[in-house]
Length: 179
Image (cartoon, rainbow, N blue to C red):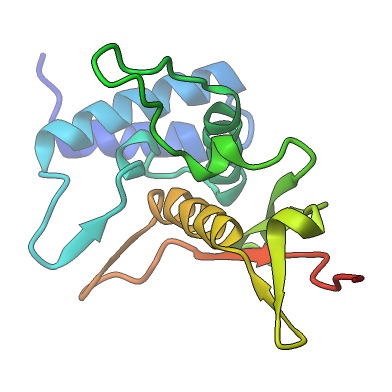
């Protein structure tokens, strides 16, 4: 007996949201729901924009699981070392991978609606330079901030008929440089 897709979606959502559902059963139901929703409607719409990693999320993923995925992406970017291309011998530049290993990058959820990436323990010689007595972010630190912001934005969506899923922010800590 074939079940109407709307009924299946409703049952899966009920199972996912039920407080006594086990974590493995919830994950399985979430994967089934994602599969149904992917086949029943397109992921792109002319009025909506989805980040590059948005498809990895489940429809009901909370900010804690999104923050965990962002942490995983940052960790992979920091440890992944591609080999130099055979023909040119040049390794591509990656701001996250090429940042000093002393730098700490933390991802936190604030107030249930914001994901904040904090960069701290930045070596002063790498992160800032002094121009006319003013401390200015180095191009390397700016590139790192931009890359982390793009990783966070990859998990968000926006559009005319929907609001953003969360607010994302990259924060640089330890901005007091002693010269």
